[in-house]
Length: 41
Figure 1 (spheres, rainbow, N blue to C red):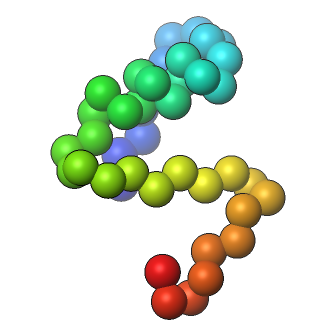
Figure 2 (figure 1 turned 120 degrees about the vertical axis):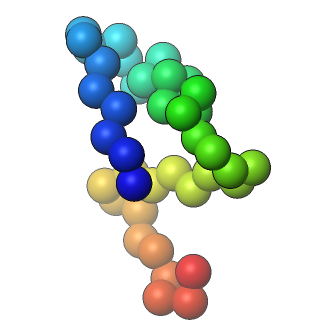
């Protein structure tokens, strides 16, 4: 896992789009603090 740090607060939507630019795989899993990951995932 890599941490992408932005110089300023750009909002959730733009921050997610910026992070997607660094993805190395075809699929991305995104989770918020209120999401639960099943143990079989």
